[in-house]
Length: 193
Image 1: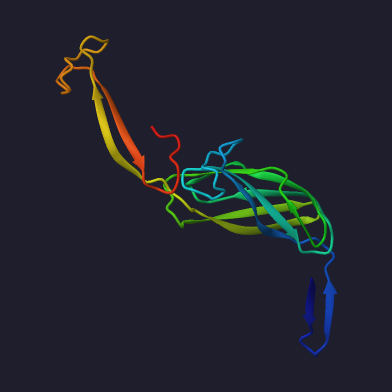
Image 2 (image 1 turned 90 degrees about the vertical axis):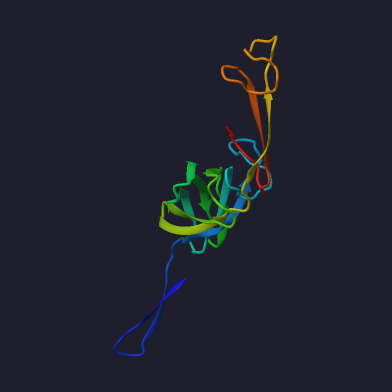
């Protein structure tokens, strides 16, 4: 990169070259939601409401010097996103080259998100040669949609429950009651109580 300097007193122009790395986010390299490791998801490699994903980022060194001891600290101001592993190493990134985080950032998205919601993230990038800040967004692609499907009442006359087995819940009876919920949405349910 060069900086152009123009004097206000003349048409004099000089180009100055900066010998330094310049690190920016190149791309979201990997979204992992396969229910292995730290991720809890449906394995479609997309971000869905209610999922916990593993994320790897790729940085690009747009400068003309190698960046060493590169770290990226991920932040998000959205209260419905939890960050579990927010600082990752990129080791060293050569000039005019890219580098991928050595391990995964781990993020969890609340089920309150809607499809097409965009969540802004900030990456604070540091290296021995300096520091930079860049941002990116992730979009919610799927969301569970629960619907009541049915129920069953079970009572036992001769079992351990105090009930008369007439399939009617009477005052003082003890019964098992099971609810059935189906998911009409484009994403799995997780941790349903």
